[in-house]
Structure formats: C-alpha cells, structure tokens
Length: 390
Ligand code: RFL
Ligand code: PHB
Image (cartoon, rainbow, N blue to C red; front, side, top):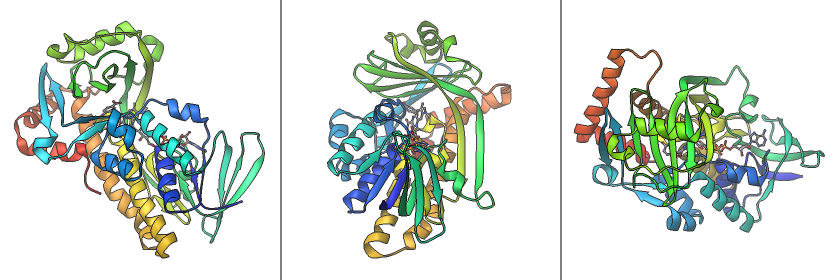
C-alpha cells in the first residue's frame, strides 16, 4: 500500500487537514485509534475564532455552522461580584462563533465521506519508520488485528497530546516546555437554557467559573476544582450550588438548573514541544502543544497549524516547492506561543491558586479592574480572544 500522506489521528486537526489535501487531489490515509462514534461524542471546545470560521467555510464545511452556530460580539468577565463586558465588535471589529467541537468534527467526517477519503478506525500499535529516508513507513494493526505497512512521503502526527508521533523526534532534538496548573475544570453539560447570551468568565475567591453554551437549550458550565477531586464527589446539586456561588449574583439569581447529561474533570496544562517537524514527520494540534481551556485557544491553534501545513504540503505536491515545509515549524510555533501566552495569562488572572497570598490576589483584582476601565487593555484582550491573524 502507498499514499502520498498518512495522517495519524482523526480528531479535528487530522480530519481538516485530510479534507484540504483531498480537495487538492493529494492522496491521503487517516489512521484513528478509536471508533467513529467515540470520536464524534467527545465534548470539548465551544468557541471558534473567526479565522477558524473562515477556514471551515472556505473548505465547504461551514453550512451547518453558519446556520446553527451563534455569533458572539463580546464576552463578560467578573470579579468580586462585579460583571463587565468586553465588546469585540467595538474594539477590534471582529467576533467569534459558538459552535461545539462535536459539531465541527461531525461536519468534517461528513465532508470526508463525500471526498471518499479513507479513514481507518480502531487501528492499534501504530509505529513509524524511515523518517529520514525519501519514503517513510507506517505500520499498524487494523481492526481485525492484522498487521499492515504503508509506504508514504509524509507522516502527519495529529494524534493529540497522548499520541505516539511526537516521540519519534529524537530526544536530542526535541525540546519541551511545560506548566502544570494545580487545579482542573469540572464541566457539566445540561439541557437547560443558558443563563446568558454571551459567555461569563468569573474570578471568585473560591475559584474560577465559566458559563458557556451550545444552543438555546443546551448549557455548558465549568468550575475550577482541585486536581485531587474525583468526579463522584460532585453530585449535580453540589455542582450547581458551587457554580451559583461563584457567578455574580445578578447572573446566578437567573440560572436554570437541571440534570447533567455529561460531567467530567479535565486537568489544566500549558505545553509546547519544538520543533514541529523532523524528516518526513510533521506535527499539528494537541500532539505538539496544549493550552489550558481558559482562552478557548486549543482547537483554534490546531486549525492554524493545519492552515500552515496544508499550504506547505500543497505547495510541495502541486508546485514542487519545499520552502514552506521547511519553514512550517518556525511559522506555526510563532503563532502557537502567542496562544500559549494568552491562555496562560487568562488562567493566571482568573483562577484561585492554592497558597496564593494577599498580594497575588490584589494583583488579579487590579488586572481585572484595569481591563474593565481601559479601552487599550480591552482591545488587546479582544485581539487575542478573537484570534491573531495568520
Ligand atoms: P485531538 O482532538 O486530541 O485528536 C487526536 C486524535 O488522535 C487519536 N489518536 C490516535 N490515533 C491513532 N493512533 C494513535 N496512537 C493515536 N493516539 C491518539 C485520538 O483518538 C484522537 O481522535 O487533537 P486535535 O485534532 O489536535 O484537536 C485538538 C482539540 O481537540 C483541542 O485542542 C480542544 O478540544 C481544546 N479545547 C478547546 N479549544 C478551543 O479552541 N476552544 C475551546 O473552547 C476549548 N475548550 C478544550 C476545551 C479542551 C477541553 N478538554 C477536555 C481538554 C474544553 C475542554 C474541557
Ligand atoms: C466551552 O463552551 O466548552 C468553552 C468555552 C470557552 C472556553 C472554554 C470552553 O474558554
């Protein structure tokens, strides 16, 4: 078997890249460890930068998003029971789209079916060889347990943080940067009307909270919890009580509660591995970098990697130009670090850190007060939140 490109991982970065390459008539194979049902049921991101919206629309997968998604022209932040709004439209003349990652992935799988792109699910034991030769090899076991080997020109690691691809970059060359935060997010999805038309990021001395949404009758809420907390500790009622405590009273008085239909705890981490390519191997998305969800940047950084990488691969295959591929890692990382910085900054300002002293608390409050009063600070926040240009 032979393909021009083999992509490891059928999450949003793998499937969007596969679609863009297939549209340029590049022969691509996607290998995914889980079932399609599993991939399509993962509840994750909710906010798309306009760059992401444009990319999805231009690649022909925007019609459900543009009908079912919600355009948000601003967001609320709160601290000390005071809520203020940052207006993206007024400050930077841009907006974001609230549309679940689950829906984005569904749209991408539908499009891949139309382009007849081959995705193999439930593959196991993926391994890579000959990364520095003209052609490389990918070996795996298919869903029936039969060993297969594919010859390919390029291997793209879109296999997320726990994937195998990154580990093929020799340790002498790979440099990683990491910050692990001493808390996680407990997230709840519930079939209740969202409490607010726009998101509310709340800083509270008991910990951070976020009110988000998926649609008119589907709310997504998060609260900061200690890393040691187990999900069983949180009944629905205890979640709602804590959420109400942390949101400003004007909001929590209006919240409509109901049973959770999904409840999970996610740890928070900032992580970057450099470089994003080695020989014929290229990394995109969470396989190379992770952000805490506070700035809503994870999925959007995966999409910007795919933007740069698809252009580079297309210019190689169509124009025989290797220049962009050679610069891919440097180009993608320059944008990644800005997303890492913004997510780290927002996490630092909005969360309660165990052992935080009065000075650190006062600095957080001063940051938020400055943001609430300064149009310059709001412009900088909005510019980063809606997404820096590609
Ligand atoms: P994914 O989505 O992890 O997909 C990787 C895929 O690779 C497969 N895989 C393998 N396949 C074959 N062989 C192997 N050895 C394999 N190992 C792994 C996996 O099964 C999987 O299907 O990475 P990708 O495509 O790079 O996409 C990244 C995004 O999913 C991620 O950045 C976002 O979900 C992060 N994120 C958010 N991003 C935003 O932009 N806005 C948000 O509002 C936002 N909210 C969030 C989030 C992530 C969260 N969690 C749970 C981490 C909220 C949360 C709670
Ligand atoms: C979400 O709706 O899941 C969501 C929204 C904004 C974030 C993170 C997650 O910053």
